Image 1: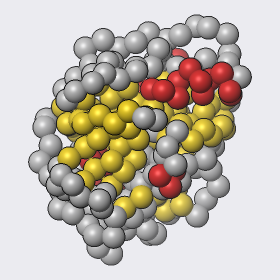
Image 2: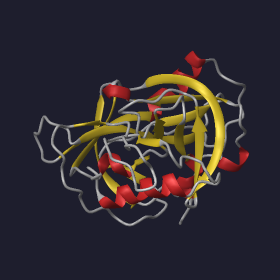
Image 3: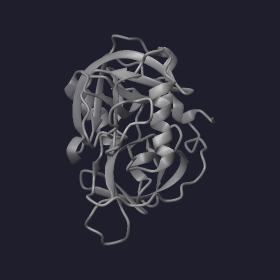
Length: 266
């Protein structure tokens, strides 16, 4: 079956399907990538779909810069008491931005959209497949709309950094490393499912996986088209992941790239 997204991204999905730490993990299942509609890699017998909302037309991929850790300082983990869902959303919601991508100035048709999470006053992290098919990127959060550009990208792992061209972002206050996470923790997602910016979801951390050298957090929190690039948070408001893909025709098998992977130089 043909893939409707760039070949590099199809290769990413092939890695996800075939290189999990569990021998049969995802072997016969459908993978839904958090942003666009895709067909499966060879070892996945059903179709791959991302969470994002796509425009009717498919745009060609654009060149992206090479990978580097663009945010020099990684925020440490916050150790405050657990927050209620309402307080958590009030604390971290302003750090999650809607991402809109268009081909040219003045265009009313988005090539794609999803989310990104601010990790410094100038930098936000997201998935590459959100921004790989358009040339003009904007970040929005409430009344603020900021132009941005890609400052670092690794299509293989689907990690991208965005840098605002003007204005400032409101970064998250804490980030937890993958090695400190535990199955059974309560987790929260904030993203743009179906284009509804800053939507809050809740679930459990249901697994910790390493696939093709990349660390992923498996969760039961709900995700939908448009959730790509959204934030995954622990109950203290620490960013622990960026929502990236789900397994279709299954129940709550959703995955986020571990936030600490964005400070991995490889």
